[in-house]
Image (cartoon, rainbow, N blue to C red; front, side, top):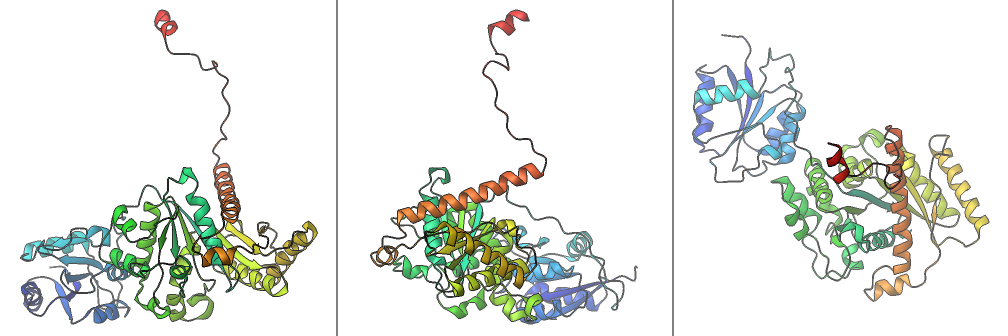
Length: 440
């Protein structure tokens, strides 16, 4: 028998038959395994994070907390997730990251076969596991465009997000598949849209993906859209509710939105610090939604106000985005309440570039020219009366952001070597018909 052994974590209800059975196999040396019993999900997570190598995590399907994030944590340390399911629960275990599913009455040979095919043995207690690449999870063939809107408090970022969603929703090319997702810690869109109900929202969407893989109709059912050209995903009900969000589940929920809608407008906070920037894991977890969105967004629109303080706060947000790795070419500054004078607007654009260069990298010339939005005194009245963002503002913002995104796509295609389309003169390609038949 090989000296290599499998180190297996086990988590199940106390009276589970298989739990005692595997323990007996380990004790009697019927199988080359070290079986470590866990009494809770928290203990399993702590052991996975301890640095000790494990071959597999075997967990009962009925245990509360057996979710996408737990399986992802196990996979990150080379520990394969195995689920014991009698078939009475959900069937999409593979989509949650589970390597294999065992029946409730599995025998010794079945367990050995699953370990051989999916887990890696541990050489000694002091060496690390020999990691094998996991089977790639199926990726969606198509994802909708992700457009993030952020900005310091009071700069009108929520209003711009509403205007963008409305403008995109009125565009027939988007097929009425536009959603505005309120992903701020202090969510305001329930109030701005006069939503009578505060559920369902982002918490329910993340929970749905935590334990399964909802389809487009299920995702759409968790949004609101009566009377608006776009759907609305409500945000957190309380600021402190960010603690219930898990990274892998939130990522899956965001992917679910992008596979359901052609355009996803995400209203997010400007705080994107993580452990790498401030040394705090708690801060990174608090900023989970904003950090996840900005790293994947096709466009990040950043709002600011005209004036010294407004431009300074805008430059600060732009610098923070650059520090977390958002490319300059995907950032669109927006200056609200801008003066009409072209000279003043030009001076503001230069001031923003200079401030960003001082705060972060010296070269800020690659930043896009800001979009200037003039004063609109009808906005507050329109929001008060439940009319939403004015149509003129919606048209302006949607046209600018869509055009900016389209130019990026065109530049990416040119950079990849794809040839530009060429016009074809009618008749130059010949014709199918009697002439070809006669020639044959």
